[in-house]
Amino acid sequence: MPTVTVLEKLYGSGSPETFEKLYSGLVSGLKVQLGFAGTTDRGWIQLEVSGEDEIAALSLLDREIGLAPVSLDKLKKFSVIRGKIIFSTESETELYVDLGVFSPKVSDAVLSGKRLCAQLADGKEVSLQELVELFCLYDNLPIEVKIAEDVEEANKNVEAVLSEAQFSLFSRWVRCRFDRLIILGSLFSDAERAVKLSRHSRDIIKIESLGVLEQVVLCKLGTDAVGLIPKLGRYLKSAVLVPFSPKKILEAIDSQSFDL
Image 1 (tube, helix red, strand yellow):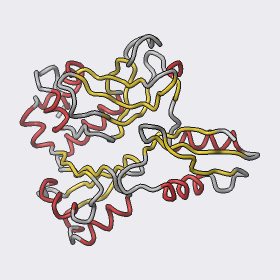
Image 2 (cartoon, helix red, strand yellow):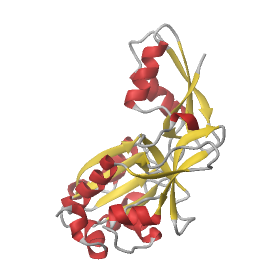
Image 3 (cartoon, helix red, strand yellow):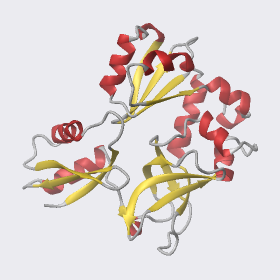
């Protein structure tokens, strides 16, 4: 019975039962048995998959959720891969992205502050921690990167940049001009419930998902995401809530970076 690692982490309000139910529903109709097998040291979810349609189930999981590369030799220069930010407040010069690589050793993607400035600030000198705050680049945020160098087993980590799709997502968020509240560590249903119980349904346009435990609340014009944090946060005790403010970004960074 093979064990695979999917690109979702167990933290916040997530539970093994939640993920097992979700993934079992995804492969329903296939002749396969799927069960929660635990997590890696860094919280990546592992599944046991077996049955007549095992190959089809693995292909479906890879397409809909993503399977971690696990081994460093799966990464190549210009590979585009999703991961989750880690150690976001621990460095003044580098942003780390956990790609789910732990063989032959744990290896992360590293985005230098200089490269992030080139992409997100049009080369303007902005500190890494300011970029982290402006773009909500906090731990567990799902993010897509592109490997920027040849991958050598001797190197501990691999150099990367934001993928074109990831940069486009941030650009759309800025151009939209509406605030967003990023919720890290909460199910979609929990975020919906928090909005309803706090009586702020009229202040939001919709809730979007970046991952199973990462939600984005799109605010209506005139609604500040910062103001929603204490209102929704009281119902989302295990989650981290951070505001994405296009106005604040445009005050700090030249608007030409986002083709306004």
